[in-house]
Length: 326
Image (tube, rainbow, N blue to C red):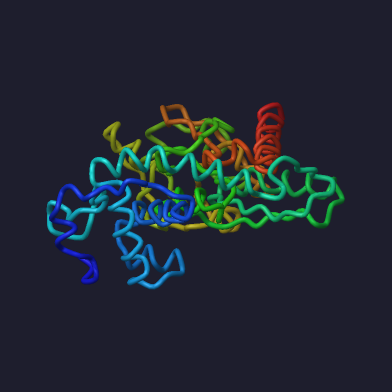
């Protein structure tokens, strides 16, 4: 527990409520409350709000009086603070209200013209997702001939993603659905089978690959965010009672083409990703069950009133439709 939090206030389950619980001057406290309930830690919340710890502690005391509730209470395990039951319900109502207010006061909230608007979008995308959608998005932006419209692509930090989207630090995320945290606005973009990729003139030939050959005769490259020898394909094989031999592991797909072209290694990838490798490779279908690869885009609730993000979502949906039809 932070030493500057009044232990007496935490111990007292009910606090005196003033006659005028919320004044106009108190509205900025709601922003502080939002961050406090996200962090459950005064030190981290103060850093995000660019306040001193004593100043934020004083705001927390004021908030407790306003809502007649401790808001943050000691965790049952004695480690840090957790929201009270009232605070959890309050936060669920507060967050969309703050998002709406933030959108309402944006100078460009009601208008976005891609041909003339000056804006830099930040898109979080996994390596595979970026390879599948970013080239087409770049082509569309170039066709607009608006040099004031820019995109920054970053690697997603899924532990922080929800907060980054809520604060507008990231506008949109493109990723497999399994990585995305809950409570985001998620839209399916692409769903595709996995295929096995190999160099041209591979000694195994070009026939579809059987489960026995896949597990017993071939050496595989595994691509994963952690760079480990065991990945989601291995998890699927394990559940079927099988295992493959992974000889090489990489974190980035940019190495895959060179590895395959200079060896007899093979790699299992989403089918729509293979053309993005821009290499003379062959694809073989697999003759056993492997789950499909689903690519999604995720935004925060605030994006429903942001004309620029709505335009960006529409562009990515159009890119996905074109990829399906290709």
